[in-house]
Length: 252
Image 1 (cartoon, rainbow, N blue to C red):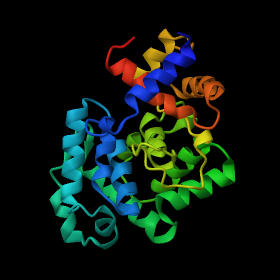
Image 2 (cartoon, helix red, strand yellow):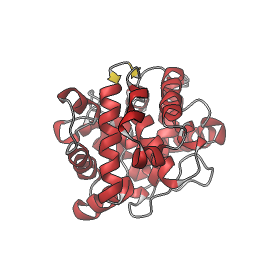
Image 3 (tube, helix red, strand yellow):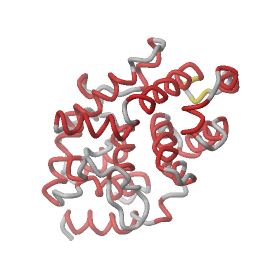
Image 4 (cartoon, rainbow, N blue to C red):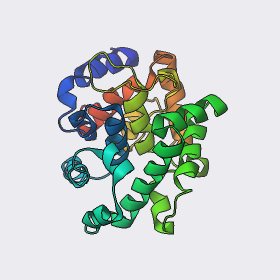
């Protein structure tokens, strides 16, 4: 079996609705309104490092604190409503980080067309996901924040692989016949997406000879995505399912 056959086989194996339950994408799948899905997805993606059960527990807690209506909460919450977040913490992400992001999201949705509006505008302006992520970061950081909160917003201009925001963009943009990714955003093509590179997908890609660079940084993201585009130029990040699935399950 050649590499392309293996990738396609494993993509079809892991790209199933059963993938949702144990993955962070299960959190936005609890919701139905577009803006709720976006906000829950974005916040969940930002805390998606570490053990998946712990990520899901913290993400569900965030959702519950927003009364399972993140868009309404972001747009209508009063100062007194924010006290409920004072004890929230997930690893190095704490209540001050979350409160900053809630205010930043409020500004985005109140004046800039929300996450989709900003990201689509940035992509159309610059033509790359790298510049889209960087521009979104700049917009969010216009809201008052502690310096410590900046580390939770990846900066590919400084070399970050931006795994979590690339994963969020895959969720929002990628057309998906099996209902795993949402495909809600139509202004950014799936062909432009970049691989959400992490330890599992990176190690698998190197074992298969798809990635030569040793560091999991933005240059590695560009290298691996370029390789995957040769296999499917319209939907290169579909192979994230294969690479991640094989890595986390010890297939290779």
